[in-house]
Length: 309
Image (cartoon, rainbow, N blue to C red; front, side):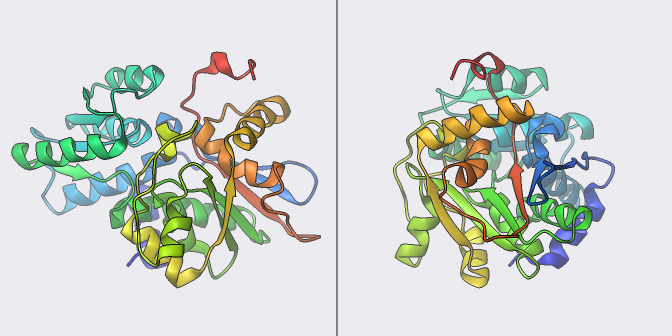
């Protein structure tokens, strides 16, 4: 179980390794944007990557020769490859064969050994866990390890430290690590709105079924929100804290991404724009006077596409 205690420990551990990203006041007294797209490696997952790798080093598990192994749609790989490069350990990353070229190129630029396997995150995951066991390397899960979740949760602490009056935090959900961490850190002080694409409703499906279940992976957010099922940690946190669950369509996400670029010059990837889409589409309608922070969690996208939609 991940609680605020673990998140606070993560905040202390990764201090000085990650950027404390700004909380942008949009000027209307009702909406703030947590600019996590400015994080090292362009994604929130850098927080969990450092927390997992540093904790493994503290326990003597991280071998400087064998390093770390991670499976990813792209972003967890980028975060862990970056963290490994800073800590001076090798990184091996397994991604689907259809992972965006912009992410694969950056993985190699960080010095990672990249293997492209299958068509989904689940295929990369199977290959990565086998490789980690064979090489005696530290396996870093993209979203379902307590240290990874706790690292992500530091975002919830920062938002409420910077603006204690926030009533609601809106986050995108794929495998659920970001949602779980933020909810563990902040659920007793703010409503947590968990936003999923209608094409990959991992959390909603789990809540309906009473357990994590597989869903079909499709749609424009598959490279970042493309987990086949929500993580066990996220499901436990959801049962314990009761999120507000909303779904948004691909057209809503595309429109939100365009709006983020047009209004604020925020280069959000599709998965990151899903959170904002909850507001722009009307899937989540704040009450009068409700003060909302929306978390834009990643910017690993092809910038040439931002002005084309």
